[in-house]
Length: 151
Image (cartoon, rainbow, N blue to C red; front, side, top):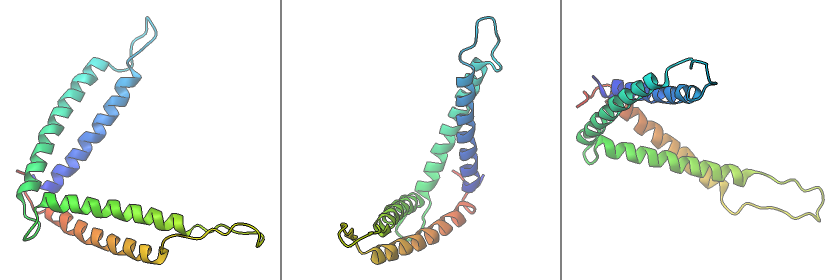
């Protein structure tokens, strides 16, 4: 199995777990004398099995990410952590640029004038650069995922 296939399977397991949780919750209580539409005990057993499979798969994914070189100095796990930090910083700076760009219209000269305390243009330039770095790193990671066998 390729790493990318394992990541898709992991996402499927996570979706199934969330669906099972909702279905179990909907069948926990019924009116006396009624039958639940689904057996919560059977779904709990299914949930337990999927969670065990997911845990095993995540361990294999983590081992693979830690053992594969992304470049000369970083493992794939290192690159994933850096990519996530780039994305988080990009989101934060994007939010700052957006909030600092909001204009407050004044209806007369006597109203208080609101000005930005940051250089929106410079921050937006950083956002654009981080977006580019993220795309480039993510593209390389995605390519590796389809060429690496899961450990």
